[in-house]
Image (cartoon, rainbow, N blue to C red):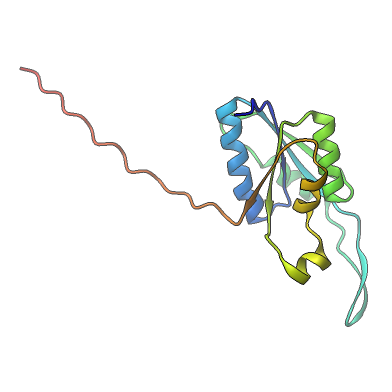
Length: 156
């Protein structure tokens, strides 16, 4: 397996991203790697809908940074970065700048017209990344293992 030292975790704070962070944290613990948690604030969108023109919401950077700083894992070093720009491009750029060994991110798994219209940050990142990209689709079920039965010690 690859010797991961730096894991770039890209998040949009969605449930899928939360599941991807669980994977990133597990990798970081196993390889004693650090995680760089990245959130990209997209530029304000201007577009048209059936009701006329609209301007997309402007994300509050203070709230985004607070949410980003809340991303922590036991026994793992997590560095937090908030950047502006187009998400896929910034993710690829940050991976190159930091020497990331792998990018871990969630994906919505959109297909067809939705993907064509909305685009896919994960797909664009996969095409241009300087390192492997691990995408997590959906949420990962968490199961708690039953405790192992206690051994009895019999002294004679």
